[in-house]
Length: 111
Image 1: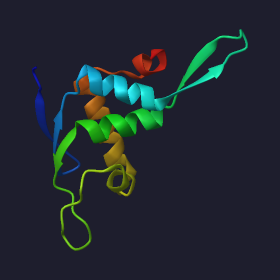
Image 2 (image 1 turned 180 degrees about the horizontal axis):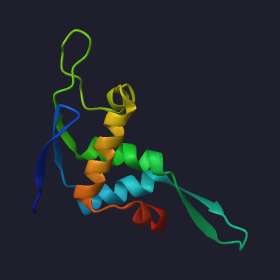
Image 3 (image 1 turned 30 degrees about the vertical axis):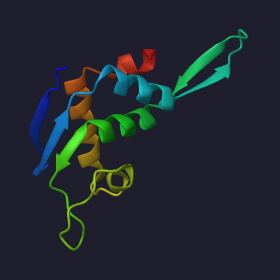
Image 4 (image 1 turned 90 degrees about the vertical axis):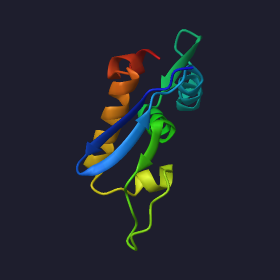
């Protein structure tokens, strides 16, 4: 198995990402998709792009240099990610992991 590691700086913060595996992608898609009965009477998927972004980011982010108010390293978790200021930092992190993992907005809509 080939895992690609990418080190980058975003808004002055050092971040290390990995590519995700097929299994990681499928798990995230399953967790981010709800199924409901469509007008045609068939099940239709409803993908939550925010949940998919959260899952992708927490699965692929391996290291960062973010710290709390006391200077202690923040754990990489959804709770930590949801508390990051400014929000533009998280948006840039999501855009980066989407880029290295080849998941465009259009692909998310089709999933």
